[in-house]
Amino acid sequence: MRFRPHAAEEGYVLPTTALLMVPLMIFVALAIDVGGWIVQANRMQAASDAAALAGAPLLPDQTSATRVAREIAGLNGFEHGLDGVDVAVEFPDQVSIRVVISDAGERFFSQVVSDDTLTIARYADAAALSPVGIGSPTNTLGFGPYAIGALDPSNYWILENNDCQVGHYGDVKAAKYLASPWCGDRPTLPENPDWKRATTGRDGGYFFRIEIPPGVNTTSRLMVFDPGRCPAYGRKPSDGHWNGRTDRGTFVEWRQWDTNATPLIRTDDVPTTDWWSSDDCPEDLLPYPASSWTDHTQGWTETPFTFPPNTTGEVETHLIQSMVGDSTRQGWNHYAFWVKTDSGADGCSAIGAVDNCPTVSAEDWIPTRSSGDVAGDPMVLYLAEVGPEYAGQTMQVQLWDVGESMDNIQVIDPLGRPMDFTWSSDDSRNHAPSNPSDSCSGDPCLYLDPTRSNYPAKVTYSGWGNHWRFNGRIVTLSVPLDSQVDFPAYAASGQGYWFRIRFQPTPTRLATEWASFALAMDGDPIRLTD
Image (cartoon, rainbow, N blue to C red):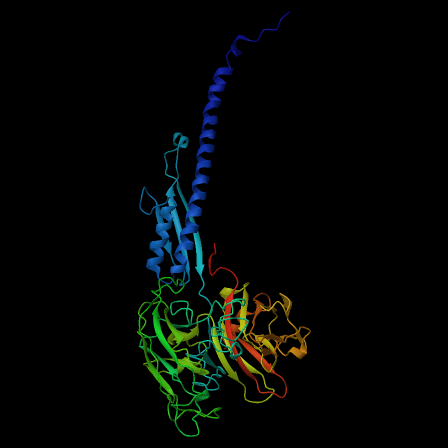
């Protein structure tokens, strides 16, 4: 006997399938639209990332940063104000930008379920860290053993050698060839890419940054100590006359540049003044070394470079370019900068007074001439202010022609503690490409005295005897800003975030150094932070 289903059960498949098709279609519709929303959100994220990275280099110019960020968002398919797209640009602080892109989600099948508007938003944060310059905690740069106010002196002068000076005089941009001290045609030797006579444009000579914070409400002026062709350290010759002497300093001239409110972008910088120089060698110069000095105007010459009060609410950056004014072989010259406010306030000589004080620093390289006071005593030079925004990066300290008569060198943190580092040299014939720092009685250091190291030092090029370990060479100290730094303790110490370099001479020698310094941080200064 054959089983026959109940008549009431016949035909249930078709209506059941019809009922199930509704949720199935809803799920398919949602899947298609959700997938589209994910693709759209990814496009918006990529566009906001690109817009933030494009706007960050223009900081602190928020108007230009906003314009460029929206332009880049538009080029990536999200034009502000078009078809409901909103590109909001915010500035959490002077060095950060946030770009938020909002747009209605594209809907296809999901409108069957709901006609509500779906808004998708994606954002990106980017930061622009200014390059770290060589400077000092005061509004002076390089003033030898002298100090304005109670702060320790910088202990070095800014040094300029004449065109094609010998390399071991410490000016990294004076020697045309890195492996030779002279200018003569030497096609077999590597040419110095930083040779300062190569051009008088944005990449020629040395550049110094003058930064005017919002707290400066009066005009600031650049003063130069010993700007003319004056003899070393301002010493008066025995006959009482400056002119006609063959040992007078190299002729240096300066001019001012405008950064166009975008200090991280060099291509739009333009000079705003003609070259200026001075033959002044004041008759009543400072003694050297000075046991006491109270006249803060003695020996200073006012330049035509002035900086207006800051009314923008943001740090304003100006540039001063230096250049050797002739090609005669006259030896060398040293000078110092002092950015002086018309208010006459002396508070700019203290660490942490930046809210109301202009600052001056070298943009990249700074050539220096330093001397200690007592044989065997260390000489400590201010290097740069490196704050907690650089935590986790590596500080790269470059030194050209470092080490004459010195035993070792250390990098010192704001608490006075030696820091661990590794080092490398551009002289592969005498040094390994990278070496751990040599040990100095348990404290990290690099031996500069060739007799205290396992690595040979003597090199001779074209009859130039090089008896010191890094004469005419670039050595790089790589200092990790990791667990060995303590930024909260630095902030509480009263010394700010100022790192220094300490030279230890051999026991019977006076610390003396002719060297150029540069400092950079590992990593791209323009980067996404979120």
